[in-house]
Picture (tube, rainbow, N blue to C red):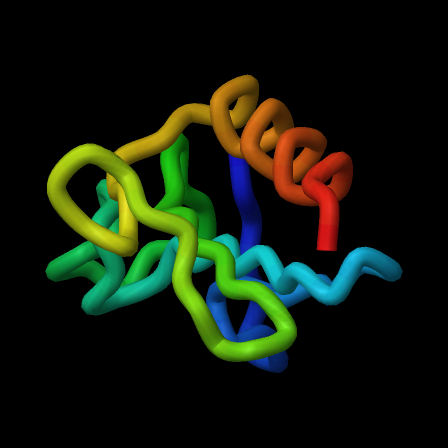
Length: 85
């Protein structure tokens, strides 16, 4: 489960040494349970990533994948961290 409070932007970006940045978003307007809600917790999140040249990781049909549960988010972060430059 992902949690937010009044000071959070309902997500985060992390840039790894390989130059890739991963984005995990779970707030109002994102592809998640909170898409049309203002809740403090969410059971899933939207994920995306891009490299140092702003080339986005491509999922099958889009550059963003929504409604991902925690294990999928963790696996995605690990995969992006392990990518070559």
